[in-house]
Image 1 (cartoon, rainbow, N blue to C red):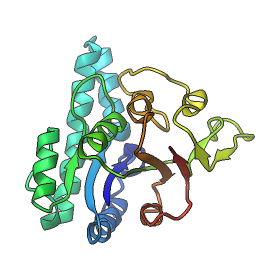
Image 2 (cartoon, helix red, strand yellow):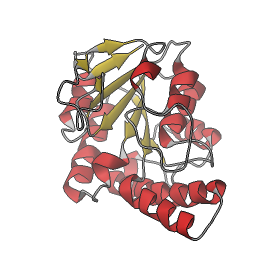
Image 3 (cartoon, rainbow, N blue to C red):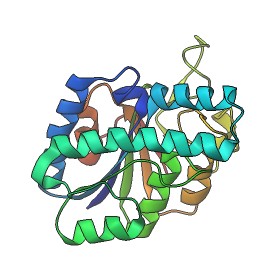
Image 4 (spheres, helix red, strand yellow):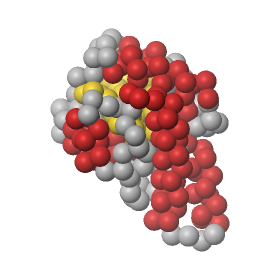
Length: 223
């Protein structure tokens, strides 16, 4: 099975969680035993802090995005170095890099790609490119809720959801530098025609990734 693992910056990098990074290195080692794997890492709060600095410097949104991409690539490089020989020599900067990495039997690790898209969208695009079976995203929520569970006590977790219905529970429907929500709307547009499933799980427990990869019910499955 081909898996794209999307590790949210809200989990690994907000603040930087060294212990969790180490645990995820073991998770991908386990996943690689039976799967081909691409890992897409976000920049989290640090990326958003630099976006805010760029805004105060009156830089254009494209420049803000480029700075955030640099931060995400630093985290991707950290993770790549941590997983050692099962990963490629360098982080992937193009889809061709990803393809070449998988051909060598290695795990491809990447951060952001280009201005105007989030790492969610990177995960969706690379999943389409390599014809992945599934995207698993580890984030700071147990799944997708009808409302923001941090703000609304009556928010209800959804076990399953269609790509068509997902935009109705999102706050933003277009890209902007530093956008932060459970799933990026552009990623949804890329995935909505199938056949790739997206599973959202609580990323603070790395074992949830393994549970999702094994096909057990967990988090929210979007198809």
